Amino acid sequence: MINTVAISEGIHYVGVNDRETHLFENLWPLDKGVSYNAYLINDEKVAIIDTVKSTKMDAFIEKVGSIIGDKKVDYLIINHMEPDHSGAIKAVKERYPEVTIVGNKKTFDLIESFYGGVRNLHIINDGDELDLGKHQLKFYLTPMVHWPETMMTYEVNEKVLFSADAFGGFGTLDGGIFDDEVNLEFYTDEIRRYYSNIVGKYGMMVQKALNKLTDAGIDLKVIAPGHGPVWRNNPSCILDYYDRWSKAETEEGVVIVYGSMYGNTQKMADFIARNLSEKGIKNIRIYDSSKTHPSYIISDIWRFKGLILGSCAYNTGLFPSMETLIHKIQNSQLKNRYVGIFGTASWSGGGVSTLQKFIEDIKWQQVGPTIEANSSPKDKDFKGCEVIAWEMAE
Ligand code: FEO
Image (cartoon, rainbow, N blue to C red; front, side, top):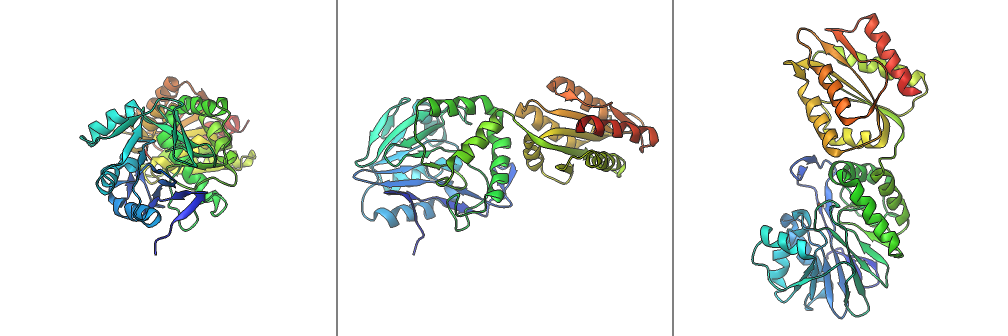
């Protein structure tokens, strides 16, 4: 027997879990897996909203069939074309050849370039509606959250918003589907990791999308994203998170990240952390950039107000894993952070000076002096680290 879950009258969850893929987009660790959420509206006309990654198409098609039996699917609505959601378009076409694919102009440009030869298309514009019988759909274009064709579909009578990547996150849905069925602490971390690494760069477009929904005055009873839990108990919780994150708002706390070959730069990181603690900072996270994947570090940098970066010199430049991290930070266009820098150099330098240039380029406010110890930290270097901690804690 196949598990299917009704999320509202006539609306079903037909998504699947992926516990096999190691890296999302072949980049981001999936140690807690991911769900590809898709939905089915079983009405006079049957509509599927989004599909799943191609590796999961069989399970998805089976779920659809278990709900509608011999009925045909009339519409396949594509909110987002990234292949974790569009990977089973061809499978739907094969199983239900008469299906009409619904999307905006940009959706169809991407369908053609990804899959080619997919016919029977219905192009919608912003605000267009589609009547399924008892259910009415309305489409909102929300470009660049986080691809150009992204849109959201709103079911008017049940007040369900199908929001694609927006409001979603990593982590499989292990039994519980809804926000009131799961431990939200676990999912909040994974939603922030998804947001900060994948959607966060487009914070302005997220704000635009949120304003559009507000201006349209739509009543949201359920938010049904493309990944992670469906929000039926407290949708305003995820709306608030998105609003805060896309405005780069922060919580009190400091992230310290270092690159250290033989422990000297690490020693300075621990010293700074102790001083922060003595000044009353409770949220302190220290990361070794060689060990922790940048996506987890970026997620915490997105969360907290302070960042302290440390690096030894390596081949006249920055330590490689720190280089990867600062490239990612720069690319994310994150704003409004306080930053301190420290590190070590034995014969050439290049680590701390690269960090200095980075914070000048990104225009974040530096706290404390720039500290570069000669091979290993001495009293004067620790004193400088103390000042970084004090100023950061102010
Ligand atoms: Fe979940 Fe942008 O794909």
